[in-house]
Image 1 (cartoon, protein in one colour):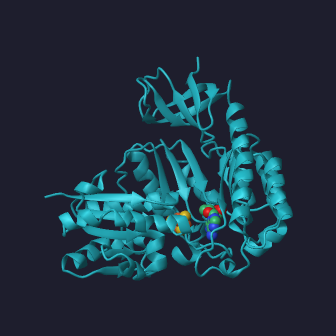
Image 2 (cartoon, rainbow, N blue to C red; image 1 turned 135 degrees about the vertical axis):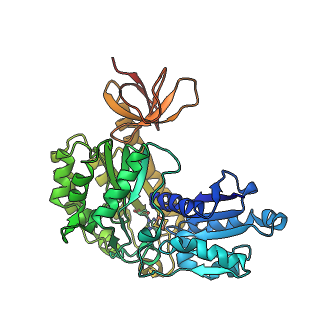
Image 3 (cartoon, rainbow, N blue to C red; image 1 turned 180 degrees about the vertical axis):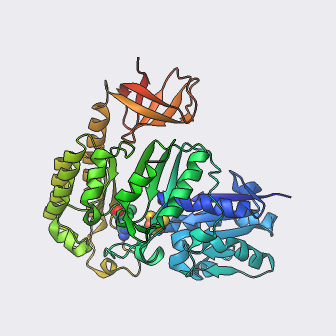
Length: 439
Ligand code: 5AD
Ligand code: SF4
């Protein structure tokens, strides 16, 4: 009899990828995906520890499963991801409903852990095992049948920015070998994928071994993947400014399949703050990279991450962040209040009062929203190429992504999911564009 698995994903795109891989491995154990926890035999929460709010969501979600577990004592509840890694056994103490705690580097062991639970024991695995989970996982199956997919090529981080939990939850920086990545990309394309986003916490430090025994850079990997017939679009995320090498910048100008979009977090616009964050780059160094990128690819759409209210951030520091944003002009960006994370150096520094953080975030977000709207508005009248990713709410409406990663709604569209078409943009709203097939 097939059993049902409900997976809920929090946090970053890599968690989305990991959730798919967990569904695939449990698929081999006879589990099929379900969209609702109510009819599940197993529930997996794939969690995020990046900010306090993200981590707390997990416990409120778990609380909702009390009745389900009372009705079905055989229901297996697992916590995976970065909260699992950071808190380990503590999760079992805080929430006795939980049966499995499994970290991001050991989820290939889920079948064993599930058997352990079936034999009446709780299972905790937060190892950073010597074996690579990728080598142990079944071949990629692309169960969701989306034309756009994620592919993890690099994981972990050795940079230890003073605010960040990632080096502790994801472990040391490591790259998957080139042939393994190419094989996975080919499998995805065989399943109908046309757009691949290469993932890594520091994806541009990628240095995977190839058959030639050499370490290949991300740029070389992108060029290699661009040879795959049927793969039309390549993106990568997330990058660190200090690893934006010249070959990668040049690829943005030369490799047709590499999309004109880059998420390159700067975090703050003040050198003092960057220094305290341990970012290893200055504002000017970041500016120079952006200049080079725009020289290589003038229409590149830029995105970033910002933290406001980092310990000891002054008004002048914050103004410098606003100034940098005005100068760069982002097409999209994420911004957050600094959240002290247990075990990270910045958590013990003198904190900025909450009210100031709130005010700064509001001001920054107003500016970023304005820029995003300007960038959307500037697309009206332009022709973009759209990969159709899903059907829209209205009849004959399709929704897809442009090369710049704008969401585009296309009316009166007879195209299928996975088709690509030239679309003339007719209107822009705050979060999406609307257009029609270009004549
Ligand atoms: N508080 C607030 N934001 C954070 N980020 C990472 N750690 C923290 C923290 N402690 C943000 C950074 C990063 C993004 C993924 O999350 O901007 O780029
Ligand atoms: Fe969250 Fe970072 Fe872990 Fe992704 S890697 S789930 S963003 S803590």
